[in-house]
Image 1: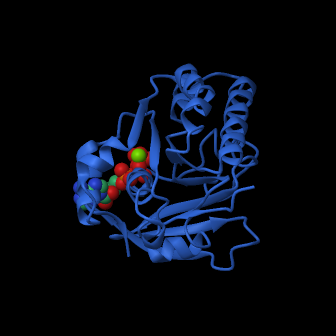
Image 2: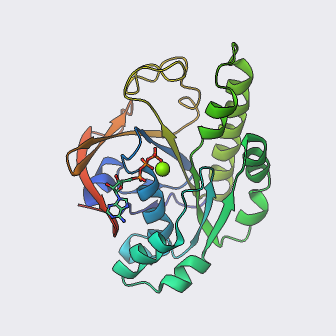
Image 3: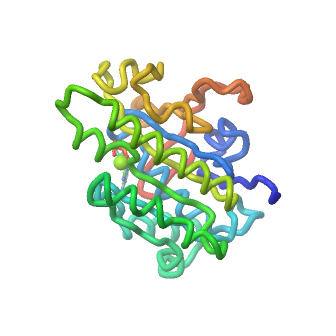
Length: 237
Ligand code: ATP
Ligand code: MG
C-alpha cells in the first residue's frame, strides 16, 4: 500500500490545521457560506498539487469537476504564475469536467477510475458536491432519494481516493441561518448527508479580510481554528 501523501493548501496555517496539507486516500470537505474561499482553495490546490514534493506538491495533475461554472482558467494562471510555475503547463495538467446536473455529476464520478489509473492525476476536486442536488430537490417533501444518491456518490469518491491513493476535495455551501438541508452549519445534523463518508470536514467563515478555518469533529487534530487569506494569488497566510 502506497504511503499517504499531502498537498499544501498554500497556507501554512491551513496546512497545520489539516495535519500537513490535504491528505491522499481521504475525502476532505470545505464548507461555509458564499465567498468564504471554497473555490479559491480548490483553484489553489489544482496548482499546488503540481509542485514537486519538496515544495508541498505531488508533481501530478488535478481533475476539477466544476458543477457551478465557477472554474476560471485565468485564476489558475495567476495562482501558477505567482508560484513560479508555467501557467500554460499548469492548465494542461488540469482536466476540467463541467457537470451540468446531478445525473451528469454521478456519471463523471462513475467514470473517474479510468482517468486515475495511470497516476497522472493525484487530486480530484468536486466544487460543489451538493449544489445540483440542493437545486433539483428544492421544495420537495422527501429528501430520502437525494440523501441516498449523495451518500452513494460520496462512497464512490472515497473508494476512488483509497484505491488510487489520491486526494479528494469537495465543497459545500451552507447558509448562515439554519436551513432545511443543513441545520446549524457548524453542527452537522441528521440533514448533513455527506458528513459520515467525508474523512475531514473544515468549516470556513469570514472575518473582515481574513478567513477562519475550523476542523470539525476530528479527534486527531489538536488545533481547532486557524486564520488564512485569499486574494488573486490564491490561498496564503
Ligand atoms: P460560493 O459558495 O459562492 O461558491 P466560495 O466559498 O467558493 O463561494 P470563493 O469564490 O472561493 O468563495 O471566494 C470568493 C472570495 O475570494 C471573494 O470574496 C474575495 O474575497 C476572494 N477573491 C476571489 N478572487 C479574487 C481576486 N481575483 N482578487 C482578490 N480577491 C479575490
Ligand atoms: Mg465557489
